[in-house]
Amino acid sequence: MFSCVKPYEDQNYSALRRDCRRRKVLFEDPLFPATDDSLYYKGTPGPAVRWKRPKGICEDPRLFVDGISSHDLHQGQVGNCWFVAACSSLASRESLWQKVIPDWKEQEWDPEKPNAYAGIFHFHFWRFGEWVDVVIDDRLPTVNNQLIYCHSNSRNEFWCALVEKAYAKELRLDEPPHTCWSSLCGYPQLVTQVHVLGAAGLKDSPTGANSYVIIKCEGDKVRSAVQKGTSTPEYNVKGIFYRKKLSQPITVQVWNHRVLKDEFLGQVHLKADPDNLQALHTLHLRDRNSRQPSNLPGTVAVHILSSTSLMAV
Image 1 (cartoon, helix red, strand yellow):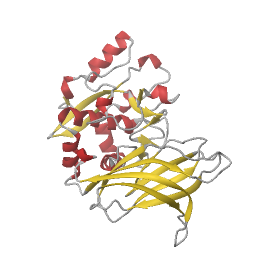
Image 2 (cartoon, helix red, strand yellow; image 1 turned 90 degrees about the vertical axis):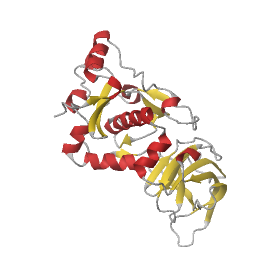
Image 3 (cartoon, one colour; image 1 turned 30 degrees about the vertical axis):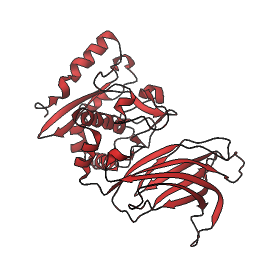
Image 4 (cartoon, one colour; image 1 turned 90 degrees about the horizontal axis):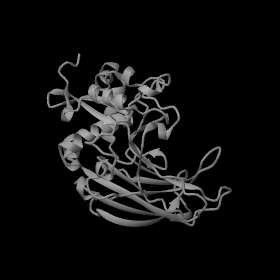
């Protein structure tokens, strides 16, 4: 079915896999190295990233857990809602995802044959009128042992993270990310970066105010790591969102992490007005239930940067 598939950058999956097995090593892709240069077009924003193979993230990694579902996906910090939407559509039709994820049974982890695993995967993308086979290694960017980009509901399911890495490799080697973004999304209405710096004066709780924030924008969201034992946490979490409905506000929620059920501490809404493209806000937390929200204990500091060009954020 894929006799006309072209190896991307002349990397032959079968030959590379055989060579790794022969040498008893895990594949390391020289064209898409596990470095910051593979993550960012310019600069290295955010906390330090550690590249990990799935076996270093969980004990029992799988390509698929209980099959493939359009509800598996979360976009992570890059804010590429268009990619997550495309993958969700892909997952809903078996005839489609089996074209993009070839030989999936062969690529799946086999706990009975651990020595057969070579840390290499390949995926097919339709590009300029032909199928292209893109090879990657399995090293994925993490912060605090959590995948920072596209990931599944199941911690040990990696198909979407690996497909995203293969697609990112294809885009990175072809053209700068800002050009790719424009061509994939059409003319961008507005690209907004939301940088939650931290909070102060959060109310006391039995857990010491072990808090985290969630940034929500047009159905997408980014969550920070839990900041433990402080009423003045520094979240330093960023999210980049492609916005089409500029009248809808961006929401930042603060939550207290509890053993049984997390506790809502408050939220703020930001308009991110296109006429005020860069602003630093310190806002009082408000309730979410009452018709006229009242101020709650604590403030949150948020930096907003909006532009019609991804390069600017």
